[in-house]
Amino acid sequence: MRKKTMIGIFGIVICLMIIQISPIRGANFKRNDPSGDVAYYTDHTKASSGLNIYPEIDIESFEIEGEAITITFGAAPIADENHLVKFSVFWVGDDPLGNWTKGRWSGLENYVTTRIENSTGGMIAENSLTIDPAGLTLVIPIPNSSMIPNILDPRAIYLFTYYYVNQEDGESYQDDITYVTGNFPGFTFWITMAGISTIAVMGLIIKRKKN
Image (cartoon, rainbow, N blue to C red; front, top):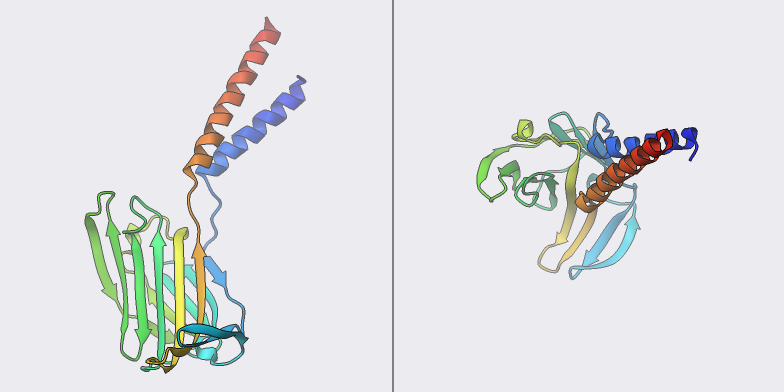
């Protein structure tokens, strides 16, 4: 095997191993949502979608920046009993199902809560704050944000908005963002093993050539 080829392979392996432990992160986390994609539900069943109406529930984006979440809409969000914004963010950690931030905002409810648990399900911290509207956005502080080291790398996000026409009949207009990702420990394991094996084999080849 030529020296240049061996150096190239060695460089690729090292890069793969560095990438898995040092992922590139931006200054914020953002998910955009198309405009004019409100759906109509009747009897709790989707009847139509892609509607350019009720812009106050039409989500434009969901963003995590610093210690706050910002949700942007097509028009200023409305706080009354017919409107509702609710969301859940599950953070990567020892117990993803127990490490979360959840909130609801309407004319009847206004809160955001973060709960942090350890690997055995014991609560480390839980705290609640309120949500403030600002123009076309809801600015949502993240309680216990200092305890979330991977705040720009959420495991899952579920955001739903509603305008209720008749709650008893299940008639409403809705929009949503759903984002789900996961760690792949198997992938990381095999990348590591392949890297170590490749480096070992290349070492043997170099040793034989010297001999």
